[in-house]
Image (tube, rainbow, N blue to C red; front, side):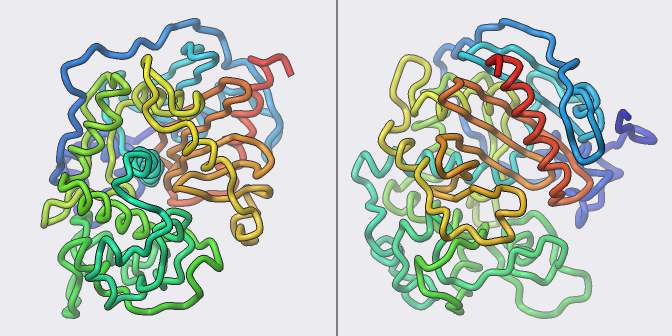
Length: 395
């Protein structure tokens, strides 16, 4: 079944407070700079890194799902796909654009952006600009007045601080709802007269409740990524878009400029505001699969990628094991199986990069699901990835 719109959506149709909700996200995820302020991630003047093409027919591959046996073609049609690309041995073996997307379209990454920040952090650790074993407050002393006091940088990299932050996407009054306002993504709820944070930094300063010991748990909280980005901006003196451009975008030989959404104080939203084209997400994924090496150079230290693949499964609670039974989370990446080296980048509404170094296999799916999270769709996408990998690797 092909997911179709009753009519084309235009900018004037999109409500400012619900641009990321269905059906408007089918348009907005490809046109976010027309809705929100943004800052460019410059690709530089260097040559584009070649992605060799060795196209194969994958749409007839069939696999089992909760709704029965389906084909890859049916999966793509059914799952609100905007862009889909598969790399094997560094070659593009399949590429598909849907819902009006094309090769140059920049698509919102949502929390896939977190893994870009994690890779960037690894570069800065190797450069000795920052030490993961030092307290967050060593770099951001203002946070001594918050619940981040006593947390190490590594705790935050692993989303393991004890800071209270409610990641309830559908509640506009939750902490992540306040992040929507602080980041400039949404206006505050109509008629609400309470104080709302006017920037991301100001929201971080309000997080004063500690609900667990630092390092004792994994609990996914988007604002942890923004704390890390503030650390990098402090130690380098650069804004995040410029730093990402210098250390990753230009070195990867990206095809297009990227961009971040920015808050009222000019801060780029590290936890989900990055936008890039499909092939550039694939270049990033291929670099991760190749232990940080791409475009003829070591971009992210191999030791950092290797360490990132070793997550602590014991901290991975039952809510996460429902969809990733053997999973873990480390250095802003998801680990599919703590006994295997597959790293993944996930974003709400169906954004996904899957990297398997053993099979030299990379898959990127950009989507505009009608819901933030959907376990059935996630499990179906994972089954599709494994079916394609089996077909390409003959078992």
